[in-house]
Image (cartoon, rainbow, N blue to C red; front, side, top):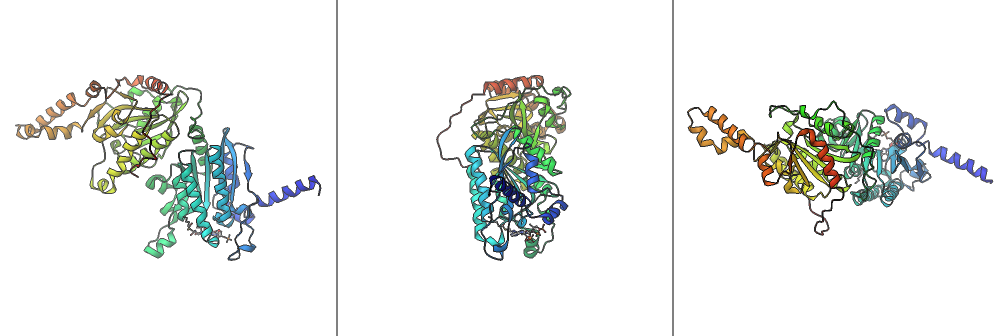
Length: 514
Ligand code: HXC
């Protein structure tokens, strides 16, 4: 055969395999409001950049009629591409081929691209749309999952790993996304659970829809499994691309720098905090008043909103923000917000991203529910993550910094490199009312007018302790600053600490309070 004929033969073969599960299955996929696996990859990576591998891989299963089944690409597409010029490895399960179920060769394709990503030190993006372990392939499917989980773990902290849930992700399959750094979900499309509605009905007799059990909103708002929620696949892909611009290729590099930009001028930083210390405000307004172009890329926006986490740029450089949100539960730390903050701090630390902490919170959330849910164990994660982090760590106390919260939110005592406080800061063991009721109990009880005495004592306490100057007099705070100076001082602190070294004792690894 001439080379020309070989080329035509190759094209014909490719065209056939690229049809996935065929016209009917694709029609079904589209009718469910879903894109095909190939379309998804091509929508994420730069034009003309996708290079596919293992297109001609076929399964080897011989049981339950599988010997006669041709499964194109074995139900998964793998390859490399670029996003705004940055290389990525990517795979997408193809639901049109045997429901995207994971058999031996399907798993081998995924582990091959994972190995590439780790060796090449580039981010990995995995698009999940699958009925889970391919039932006909038995233990081979389970082996495949195990080998994926192992690689997720080995690659953790070396390359960024991103999971996108665009269809079912059921049974043990959920654990690969759970081991990765960022999980993206899309409303009405993502379904993620360990045991499906059928099993729940059989075992527990309870009726529940897939959406209510493990839909996108459930994971974005309640479980915290998802980091980004979108209303459409296209919106989700834009989020993924934006995230890629904020993170480095691997743990030995820094994220790409962009030209510096001033915050937008409509965010006047001095007007954000209300004069009444009991009144809430949106801490994201403070972030926007500080960061380049007022562009804040929030993560887990809908989960544990009493803490705000996300990326922004400071003079063009990626910076992680952790901020108490006074608008929700007064910004307290509880089980969920502790988990949310701790994990983000560890991501920033692993990938050389400085952390800025903005503090305004009355402490850990009191109550039996929280105690029994393990607020001690979960809250400890924040202390661990901040103490462990060796990237530049800078704190600005905006208003309240009480009790355990003062220590936990990247205090000097946990290794903060720079501690700033606005003059509105209140740093003390507890809030003035609670404190006055305890330490001046006798005077208040014995007074002719206890309410008047209480008010007097509360004021006395505020004058003495509820300010930043006691902490500043001990050197726990480096500078009490005017709000308008915040950006300039933060930029300076980041610049000064750009070559920070912080050697720690040798160990295999620590034992965080998981
Ligand atoms: C083999 C599967 C499959 C599977 C789906 N298919 N799941 N084939 N193994 N796990 C096939 C179907 O037979 C069908 O093939 C095609 O994919 C499309 O599936 P449908 O059922 O027609 O699609 P839909 O109605 O949209 O329902 C999707 C679904 C359902 C909800 C995912 O297919 C389903 O419940 N599948 C089983 C899910 C499951 O229990 N998986 C095992 C989980 S346990 P044809 O040829 O008709 O097109 C697990 C253990 C892993 O994963 C443990 C790791 C540690």
